[in-house]
Length: 262
Image 1 (cartoon, rainbow, N blue to C red):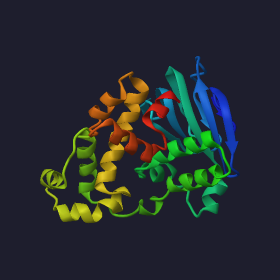
Image 2: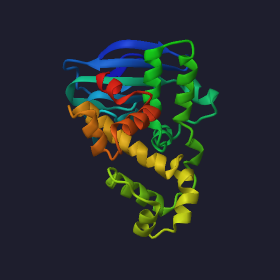
Image 3: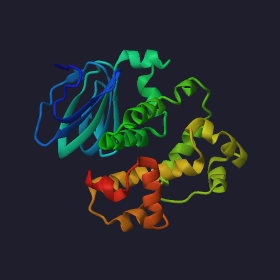
Image 4: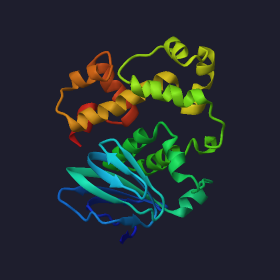
């Protein structure tokens, strides 16, 4: 088994940035690399910007696509196979002091991040700041990284059953506009209950959450197809390309055309 040190990856590292308690690397894959089991020295999360692979863990295989967020506990063993070339990852390695210095715990590292509905967009904003790389970038990146853990305190909160059901409905009907009344009828939950408690469990409003799902789907279309922007906007349920561009940039920091070219 290969044990990778900090800032060491199987692919070709093109850029690296160090921010004290965490390091960020841009890693490209243009040719086959080792498919052996390996681990990373620190807590580590990756945003797949291009390509992807089949990732194996001890108990499961995960299909990784553009827009996927992959998280690893410290020294968690895994391997990557069937890489789609070219692939590009934004990798963030987090040291233990980052958690202690910001009053966070490492206990539920993966859960705390994945409970945050903004995780993909905050990582894209970090990437945008790395491209800008001006005097304000360090502060913006730190803020975005802390935002990934912003729902940490809610992990132990009681979560009603309707929360997982509403998530399933919205993901299943991501290309539609679903009214509050429709959700209420489908879930047999009073609309006032959904309105009052949605933000508590999703860290955003219902409308914002539906737009985020559409943007996540648009990321896949932009990276995996050659469809024109007008068609992607239509397929993802936006009223027109202008609206699509506005919402996409608000969430990711990029215009769709910009994002397609990175």
